[in-house]
Image 1 (cartoon, rainbow, N blue to C red):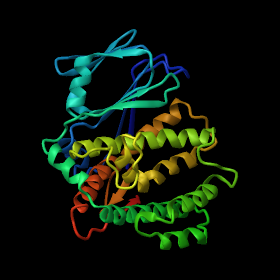
Image 2 (image 1 turned 120 degrees about the vertical axis):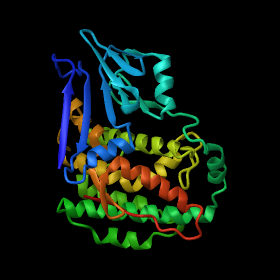
Image 3 (image 1 turned 135 degrees about the vertical axis):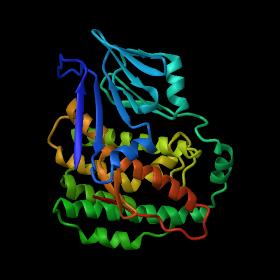
Length: 331
């Protein structure tokens, strides 16, 4: 069961986003006290989204948000993600440093509320140096083997989503799944994705066109990538050193690698709202993506929690002679 609690801190809500929204999406499992255990294990559980002209500063280890008519305070240690949803406003340097030191993901948006950059802490793990050395030493053979598993997992997830949505699964997708080679040298991932998107959004759909569907996909994928960036840096690894993606101008190659099997979680939301404008209400649903339920290692958990374990497991597997990547599934 889900509880979606949205607190509007500005009562004058308008379509132009002139408000501050705190989103707290929690799984409630009364029998085993899931929520209480989750907060004890990870105190950074809040996602805070700011509005235009908000001023953010730190006071007594609390993040203070000063709006036109009020102040709101949040314990810094509770903030897992901070989305600065406007390019009009300010944030103090001490607060930014404090958030970075506890690995809070801070994402900055442009005037259209599209994410444009984020803050990553340099040293969020005491084993960073050793793990960076290990990461740089990962062999091409091992990276190719892991990438093959990630691609197969992604195609399998895409097929699962089509099944959930009661859409036809093209036989060619099944063939591509069985044809994936080490390092996906035959590019079956791209071929399967083309077919998949045509089934999902119609044969006229083209990825990266300028339309509402692509805008929503890009927004959701950015939120997803941000979660992987945080999980990777928390583990002491570099987001830039990928196992397949190797663009010298991309600081998030490793995140782009690992997020591939998770993309269908974004696609599911976009499919449901594909005829809607990407307004603030729609963006909220994409921001709340990480608190959606999934299944990892046979257990139900939040997507963000699964991402953290997934990163840890894959990184550990890179140092093993044989390793099977655990699949992520829709709940």
